Amino acid sequence: MASIIVVGAGIIGTSLAYELQRRGQTVMLIDKSAPGQGASYGNMASIAVTEFMPASRPGIWAQMPKWLLDPEGPVRIRPAYVPRLIPWFLRFMAASRPSKLRELEEAGATLCARVHEDLEAFLRTTGLQHMLSTEGCLSLYADEAEFRADREHIEILERFGFRHEILGDNAIRDLEPALTTKIGKAVLFPDNRSIADPYKFVLAIADRFKALGGVIEQGAVIGFEHREDRISALRLNDGRVFAADRFVLAAGAFTARLSIMLREHIPLETERGYHTQIMDPGVSMRHSIIWPARAFMVTPTAGGIRVGGTVEMAGLDAPPDYRRAKVLVKRAKEALPDLQVRQATEWMGHRPALPDTVPVMGPSAKRRNVWYATGHGHLGLTYAATTARLMGDIITGLKPPVDMKPYRVDRF
Image (cartoon, rainbow, N blue to C red):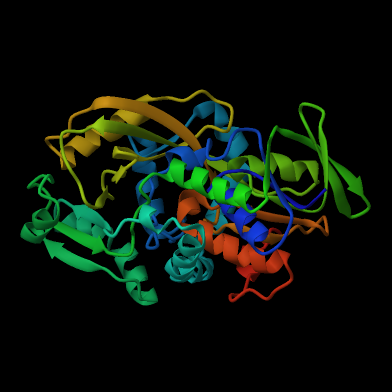
C-alpha cells in the first residue's frame, strides 16, 4: 500500500510525487491519462515569474467589455456557459477591491520570488538543468500608448523588485532580428526563461519518480471510501481500489470534480487555452515574446515555435474551437512578418482558474488526510518546483519557508 496517493500527473502532480518519493515516502501517482497529457502537454513553456498579477485588477476590467464584444478578442465566453459562470464571476469581482488586490499581489509575488531558487534545486536533483533556457522574454509595444496601457504591470514588478529592462527599437532587433519594425518599445524580462519541451519535461520527471520506486497507475477516479473525517481509499472507473494513508488532489482543472466527491466546493473553472506548434516556421528566435495589446505569446520550444494565448470560458466538456488558435497565429504574423505556418498542429487544453488568480496549496478543510495543490492558472510550470517544495514540507510535517495562509482552500 502506498503511504501517499497523488491524483493528477501534470507538471504539478508529477513534480510533487517525485519530491515526496525523494523524501522517503512511498508514493503512487494516478491520472486518467498518461503523465503530461493534459495542460502540461501544450503550455507555453514559460517560467513566467513576472506574471503573478491578479486578473481582476483595474487595467483588465477596463478592457474586458471591448474584449468580450470582439469575436477575435483575447477573452471569449460561450453564451450557453454564462449561467454556470455567475458564481465564479461574483468572486472574481470581489477580488478586484483595492485592499484585496494588494493581498493577492503579495501572495503571487511571494511564490514567484522563490521560483528560480526552488527550480534550480529541483533541476539539480533530477539532472534536468539542460532543459531550462538561458534567455528571457520580451514584452512588445507598438508605441507609447501601448506601453502606457501596460504600465500598471511594470509598476507592480518595480514594487516587488522583479528585474526588467526597457529597450528601444534598435536594441529590440539586436536581440530578435525577425521582429517587425513596427515594434517601437519592449521590456526584457531576463528571469522569464523557458523549458525546452514541457511535455518531455513531465515525462523525464515521471521517469525519475519511477526510478526512485514510485508507481504510476492510469485510471479515472470515480469515488472515495470515507472513514469518519478521513479518506481510506479511492476507486477507479475500471473497478480497482487503492488505499493510502494520505491523498493529494493535484488534477488541475479537474480537481473541482474530485473535491465535490469530498463535499468540499472549490470555485475552480477552466480557462481553455489554445496553441499552434509550428515545426518549420521559417524564422529563428532566442527569446519568448509576448505582445500584451494583441494578447498572444510565442515561445521557441519542442523543436519549433509555439504560438499561444487567449482565454475561452466554456467548461471542461465543450469541443475545441480552433478558430481561436488561428487568430493567435494571425496576430503572431504581425510581430514576425516572415513567419511561415508549415508542419503545424493545433491544440486546446484546460488551465485551472481560480477567481483570485492565487493557487490552492494546503490541507483540506473537510478531510484530515487530504491535501490540495491546484488552481495555478497560467503558472503551473512556473510554480511547479515551488509547489513541490512547499507541499512536500507541509505533507511531511515540516514548516514551509513561507506563510501558507493565503493559499488555503477555505479562503473563498
